[in-house]
Image 1 (spheres, rainbow, N blue to C red):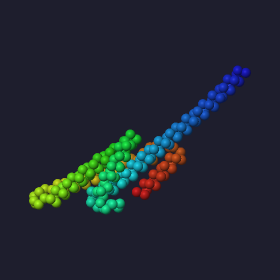
Image 2: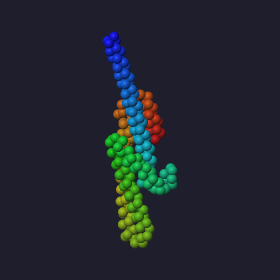
Image 3: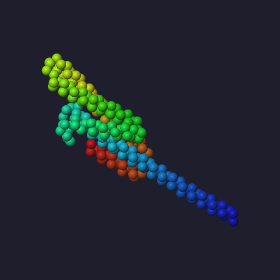
Image 4: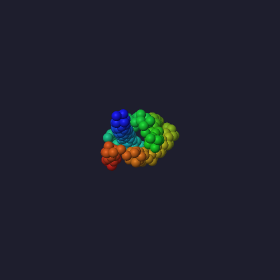
Length: 196
């Protein structure tokens, strides 16, 4: 009788162990899915802000109207601040391959912002100056500032595909497979990137 009790107890423990293992695996899968979804949201937001920032920065540097506003310099600061906030707020959650170039783009955005403010001051100074020599000096400084802005924009254009490719690699290749939810997230991301 005791042997049957031990066999029954052994069977119950084995069943309990199997159920426990399945439950843990479901929890891991669920946790992985949540992490993947959160990571996707971070990268999607980063990509949106970076795309907007690149367009407005290009319009500011090349002094041409942006599709959304006549004078892009008016909304440059707001768009740049939004991009910078996404990078700063999500720093611990962004992999180094994405964060490094994104942080460098933020640095170049600061350069564009500082040079733009310097250019405004030089334009105001130049409009008040009646002396040809002082006007020529201000024009030379403005030319140097324009070149500095163009270098910063060139650097942003160089880093933009680096960030894009790092995000694609992180979302589409490096994440371990995770059933149908992962595929639906990848499809959303592909549709989003194919539009841009």
